[in-house]
Structures are given as C-alpha cells and as structure tokens.
Amino acid sequence: DIQTQVNASSAGDTVTVPAGTATWSGSLTVNKNISVIGAGTNNTVITCSGSALSMGTTAAGVCRLSGFSFVGGSGGKGIYVSMSPTNYVRVDHCFFQGFQHGFYWFGIGLIDHCTFLNPTFLGFVQCPSPAGNPTSAQQNWVRDHWYPVPMDTTNALFLEDCTITWTSFNNSDNYVIQSYQAASYIVRYCTINMNVTDSYQQFWDYHGNQGNISDPNVPRGSIAIGVYGNT
Image 1: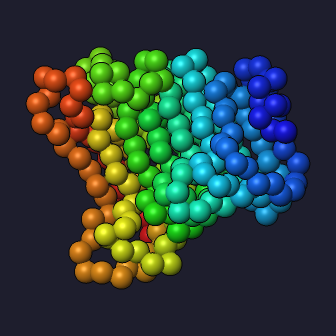
Image 2: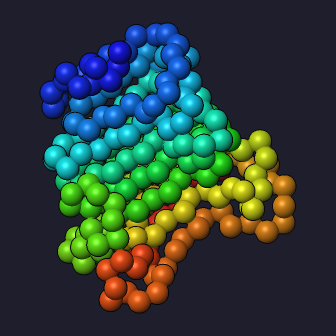
C-alpha cells in the first residue's frame, strides 16, 4: 500500500501512486522529505473515514503531495501539517471534498492548484516549531526567535491558484481561515465561491493575543496575513 512505500522511501525519493480508488480508515503519514504523486484528481481517488494526510518533518527540505482526490465526511482534516521552520511542505493539484478542516497547518509552505469543496472550515494556521511539535511553548519560542520574517514563500503559508466552494456558507458553522500562535499566511489568486445564508459574516478569524503573554502556555496572536488578487 501507499504507507508501506512511503515508509520504505528515503529523502529525495518519489513514490508514484497509480490510478484507482481506495477507502482509508486512517490517514497517510508522510514524515520525510519525499514526493508522493498520484495519477491525477480524476484518477487516484481516496475516500476517508477521518483525516486524509499527516505531513511534515523536522528535517530541512521539501515534502510534497500531488495528484489525488480525497473525499471525506464532516469530520477530520484534509491535510494536517506539523513541521520545523527549516521544513517546507507543498500540496498541489489535489481535490478535497468535505472534512471539518480542508487544511490544518502548523508551519510554512504552499497549497496551490487545489480544489476544496464544502469543508466546514477551509483552514487553520499556526506557526512552525523547532521540534515539529505544536505546543504553546514551542510556538512562542518561534515567535521570539524567528519572527519578524519577510512575508515570502519561504517564511509563510501560501494558498494560491485554488478554487474553494461552499454550496451553503453559514457563519455559525463556517469560516475561511482561523489563525493565531504567530501564524503568517497569504491567500492570493484564488476563486472563492460562497453561497452565504446569513447576514453576519466572519470570513477571516484572525486572533490577537489571548491573555497574559508572559505565560508560555497562553496562545499568542497571529503575525501577519495577506489576502489579495482573489475573486
């Protein structure tokens, strides 16, 4: 299976997955700097009972996934990423349907040319951490020692050239992206289709400091976001 191939691979390898359909009861874990490449969103289709992917590592390098469709329910995460500041994750040319979160991202990287259909929440973003462990103390260390950083493709999460669609968007149930704990991200050149069903909207849930910032266990605010060039 795919997990066996990933486990047997070494950094720099490419794991190629042929066309076909499968049902996963657990998520695929990619914790090394490899590429996992499917046969395209119309050809490699995975139905998930929970989360689909767990990606990221503490090693410097690039971890990539491309060419899959993932169909989930109302729970779980399409993509879960936890990494150190020296790691970089790219997810491209994939399709995600359903899931509570389209992506749940502790780190930097790139999501491009992907389609998200009816996630409860599109995304949740926080900063990376030295041990790839998203605890408050780890993330506060990153904020104190790594930021401020330029808002470029090596220092933030970029969501670009994607299509995001909700057939019904209700603010009591949905938001686009929530962030805190030194998060930094850019959303650009995306097509975002909302069929809004209520009058009060909180599309971008951008948190500030959540209490006493001298306490390392208290979540801190987001660093910066950019949203431009979208339709």
